[in-house]
Each structure stands twice: as structure tokens, then as C-alpha cells.
Image (tube, rainbow, N blue to C red; front, side, top):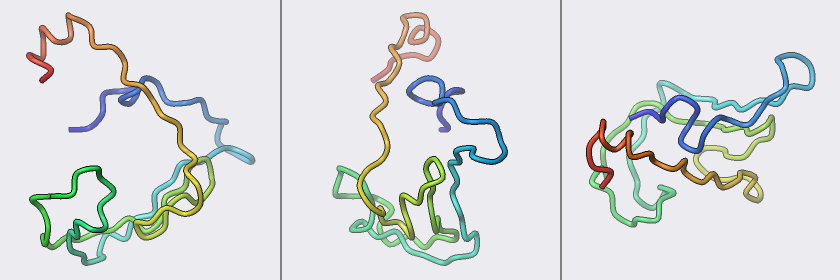
Amino acid sequence: GPPPRGGWGGPPPPRAPRGGGAAADLVLVDPDAPGEIDPHRLHSRHPVTPYAGWQTVGAVRATYLRGELVAKDGQAVGPPRGRHLRPAPVSAAATATTGSMS
């Protein structure tokens, strides 16, 4: 499902207000692009996917982080620019209402 409000690692980093000079995170999508799930193009630690060969519609064409192109047509552009976010601690109350965390 979607990440909880504020993201998996807590609140998002602050951004400049909209307007000139503001940082932008942006994803450009081609909603009509046909495709196929190819395990060799997935960026995952696990080498196997049950979705291999599935036909898809829609593709991410470009991803911008803080206004800078970081991925184009599924491939990283330049060095990594992100930062590692540690998961927020899970409280006992949260596990009691959602069940086991395993």
C-alpha cells in the first residue's frame, strides 16, 4: 500500500515555497507506453519476480530530484543523490492495532 502520511522515514525534507528557485521533485509519466516486466531491468536486490513477462501500460520517462534529472527511462543518471532514511521506530501501540509486524 501507499506509505503512511509523511513517508516511510518520517516527514519529507523541507522544500522552498513554489516560485522562482524552488526545489522540485517531479516524475514524468507516459500513460500510454506499452511495456513488459523484465527482471533484468528491475532495481531490486532480489533476482526473481513473479511478474516477469507481464504486459504493462504506462512508463516513467524521467525522474527529477530537487530539480535535477536523476533517472531517464528506468536508468539512473549520474551518481546517487538521495539519502538513506531510517525507518521510524514502531511503537507497541502501533503493532497492537495492526497485528504482527512480521
